[in-house]
Length: 349
Ligand SMILES: Nc1ncnc2c1ncn2[C@@H]1O[C@H](COP(=O)(O)OP(=O)(O)O)[C@@H](O)[C@H]1O
Ligand SMILES: [Mg+2]
Image 1 (cartoon, helix red, strand yellow):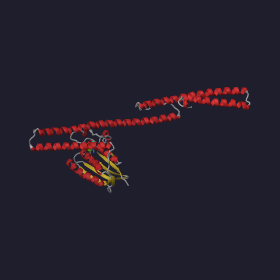
Image 2 (cartoon, helix red, strand yellow; image 1 turned 45 degrees about the vertical axis):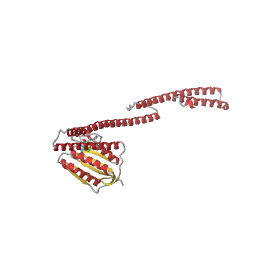
Image 3 (tube, rainbow, N blue to C red; image 1 turned 90 degrees about the vertical axis):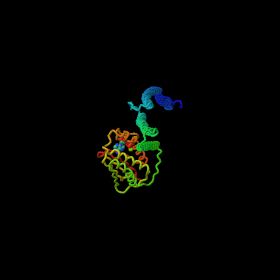
Image 4 (cartoon, rainbow, N blue to C red; image 1 turned 60 degrees about the horizontal axis):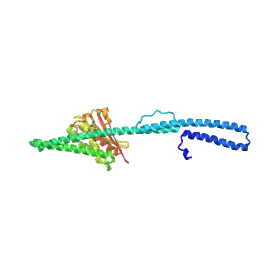
């Protein structure tokens, strides 16, 4: 019996047909003795048995043929998937069990294709991140070197310029250290190593602190910063330093992209099971081709890739990582000649 297991389906089903006919034949011959069946009837029975065996074997061979075609097609599909070709195969009609298996293979292939596309997109954005970050590290370093060399060579002598160079070095060092800090935060988020120390916090207080802290940049730029709290301030379990970091980035972005004399509105409130903070500005709207990409690490619109701009395009990627670590979500849409970023955080009972 063991040696039968590995034979082809055609052989096995032919064997089944032959053994059935043989069993009937043996039974009939044994019974014929007891039942006084005439030899004429017996030979007629033999002819019938031979005919049924032939038909049985023919059917078994046809079945074996279909099964083997279905198996070949499945093997071909599996081989293609193994080689990374996830295009849908043209399917032949196959027995139900094989069709089910083929459906499952097709599902798996679609999932693998999706995963592969995501992996490629991630890889591309990682490469872009490394390229931009190295560029962003080089620019302030070059500035520092030039200013330090000028001071060292005593090319500049008047006290005012010396003080300006010192301040310039200081500003570039601050920029570098912000960038390194952002990179560190982003790598902790990507590695899933962000440890949140949750504590009960009033979201309204956190927002009003962030608005006060950003008001000097807003004044400097000539942008009005309006904070509104709808109803009572929601109390949430969250990590105050991390959420403050998100708010700081949303406010700084909004102020930076709003022209002089424009208004940035900050709304805080509760919407069913979520508390929300919305920062709406008058940036003129984010171009449709960019709006889905602003949360990608290192993404900056063309206009934002200027040396005066400062940011490395990591702020919103970090914001999304932090908000998602709080099981919340952050989104953006264009609205009334500007854009509105909304952060939603779950309210816990
Ligand atoms: N409030 C906003 N208005 C218009 N564009 C924005 C706004 N916030 C972000 N963006 C776009 O998204 C990009 C990424 O933002 P962010 O990740 O904070 O990086 P950075 O501030 O360093 O540029 C910005 O360069 C800009 O193109
Ligand atoms: Mg930013």
